[in-house]
Length: 188
Length: 364
Image (cartoon, rainbow over the protein chains, first blue to last red):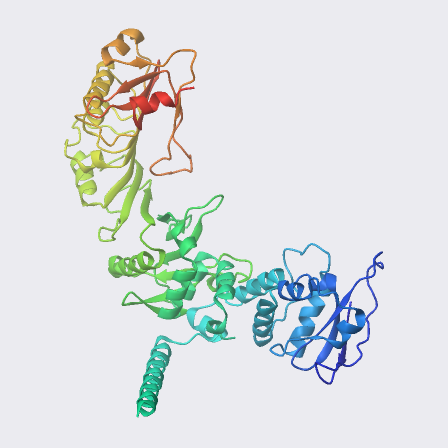
């Protein structure tokens, strides 16, 4: 169960709406936290769902926020696109308190989305979802020729790698020369 | 999707979800990618103990990783299909080789199928193509992998066995017919072959024995069945580790001499295991054991069980048959022990890498 609403800033988030509970109401009232991504849309997520994320779980452990405090202090994940965070929140809600199935077929098929999802999931430390995503990424190149794999995963050729290495060396050399010159100037 | 921008942990997880044949294919994409796979999957690649070159059910040569219940093909080698363009070309260890994708040639679903590349090998260019690919394997899989060239039931001396592939041992098994009844042909074949890992001969009849210096006797493991007149020579000249012999004829004196020579340390220094299945012999066991100089573990005590992995597991038979015997002999030169079990129709002999004192400590 999550809710989303366009917020104005991380300090003053908009009032989120709560989605209907799919499971029976728990005996003990569940605590909720709030997260938002780059788009500032705030998602209300239960502590149970957030347990999938080792990063957030670590952040909220023993935090002792009241509902109001939680609402007033959403966790900002500025490095994650809003739609990607939505996918993550949905997945955490769907798998809240349930054993994770061996496969997940609901992952995005578009490679750019999947790429962003992998980075987000890795950052948020959601181990099971990361496993699914990595399986999906691996599946993308199954049965493909080396050239097709290169295109799908955007792997540079040997020549491009060599050029990039040369460029990096050149840059490092320039930086080192600049530092030496600056140091000499300071000494004067 | 720029895979190189993924953190190591993520890349490792992706590679972990790929089969070895897929990683091999990925390694062809670039030198950097190959390096990345080798460092990320170091342990996994090191755990590949054996790669086997053998023909599949369609009589095509394949490189397999032996696994149970099915072997993983990592590459297949086929004659070029002149009617089709190759799916792609690769420069493998400096040689340009045409490849096809096994999934496409048979219209197989890519997602559910064990995927591997198929190399086109021109007959005239066979040795150098295999050499290039083998060189690539040596680099990719590392030094700890053993390579076996398995040839089963071949009929003639023209059969192809590579001679220039480094680190490849030959495992050969055959029923011997003409022209193999010509012992010289067989000798020449063995001498031009790479290291012999296993030689399995069945129903062999020759009036002339192998030359005592024959490479046949240097095979790591031999398995011979019903090979008339061969037993005394094998018991005299074998220098390998494991021998499995079934014979129609046997003299008890040959067995006695074998054990005595092992005990003296003059021969069979590498021998780990010998099993001879014999025709029924009429002999006095106690007398034979006395001649051999057998020692005994107390009858009420449990002797240690001798068993070890077969040098080459031809049919996934696992370890050697266990020997649990109260009888043992001791080699005079280094005090090493061998369990010995003489039965009416079999002699089992298992050498331990233990001194008598260490061996007796294992007795319950």
